[in-house]
Image 1: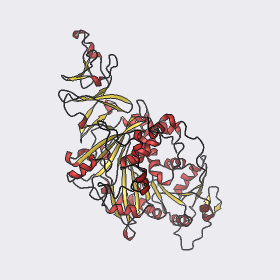
Image 2: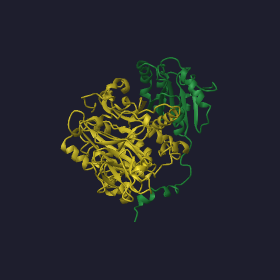
Image 3: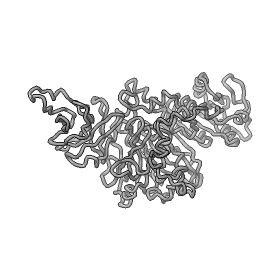
Length: 427
Length: 168
């Protein structure tokens, strides 16, 4: 359980909130690069950390992330004309450049320089790894660009998707580090999903339904180790990475692409679930990409023209009770992503954690909350929160078999950090 | 018309969740396995708890022999001797607290008793910052066979946060 004031502290991320300040210290995924496909393309509405913004790309290809609303009368610039190196409000013709600086106020004499007094709030927007990243913190504290391994891969070795999730970011993120639900909720997928099946690790997973967990603090967050029995007294380990505040990486299975997520607040009752897959030494196979586009693995299919999952709360997630009854899916919902999202959304927009009854196997979640609260306290004293240091981003999840007397943190140390030119350690 | 899932997962509907207690207090036995951990556990015991009780097993010094007595080395914080089996019988969960680098052979005795009685065990290792990997591994090796959940925490305060989260 968490006390109400602690829950509020961790779940509220709007301007001026401590948790919002932590998020604003990081580069965050804001849009897919495909959303701004060409110069002078239509602008895209973006809401992040409870701020209404507009992403656009000017005549020369400058990426812009500015206040959505015109400084004149508050019109949404989504209706704006993206022309001649600026975005023009269609109401009275005020025009802004990619930094948010007003460059024309047609009703005022040009010589008056009035337009120089008008500037919209704007944030940097840069492309890396097929993602447009933004930094919403104070300019003087802007960290170096992110170096998550997937983002450093060539385009043919990575795949990124995003979907909206209609609950607070923490609910969604906690699902990403809750290893013990996999054997239940996703049990049907290990043998069926083309991006999961065929791994020796799956046999260990299904052969030992009572994993033992080890939670170890890392510099950037946590290693969450799940240990299952393997042959001859050895252990099969799956190590999930959590890097503060919102990055999770799932342990690999066989030669399948490795995947993970970012959980980024849209506002306090909605978040973006970003989902990546990548390989280090080979291009993704056509059939792998096709499976991802078809909503398999950790991805989804969409309501056309949106990033809203096709199975969503408005259609009861297309729940199939017959499939649930015969065990084809455990909850009746199809696909790993929506199996998680349906349950997390059912908790309500912001779950009341004062009512929950956690158990010992929830220590990963308890520790993540503890680390976040500790980091918030340290931030109050001027410390930089974990996850910003590039070394914290150069991490990997892993799956391996170790003798019983070996500890993953020491004996599999190399498997848990980026090894240039080498694939993840996997079973 | 809105689907049932859409209607029922709204903030407005959350107000109608039943506001009644949904659990009974749990009996959680927190045992310090070594000298430095005893100080930590004593500090913890000063807080107000629902069902947590605190013990020290530091009187147990050596590697347990077969048939080792289960009495005489487990004490509550007032110094009264306690019987391990009685305490485990009355526990929903046992939390063992150890310090990285310390020798904690008593973990096997406690763990075995919990295993026999099917009581959940959690082991917490604190004080690992600044300790060598070898020192941590030594303690870890003694705890791992007897822990269904093992946590290596940098900050002592984690123990309190964990116990609060578990409604101890």
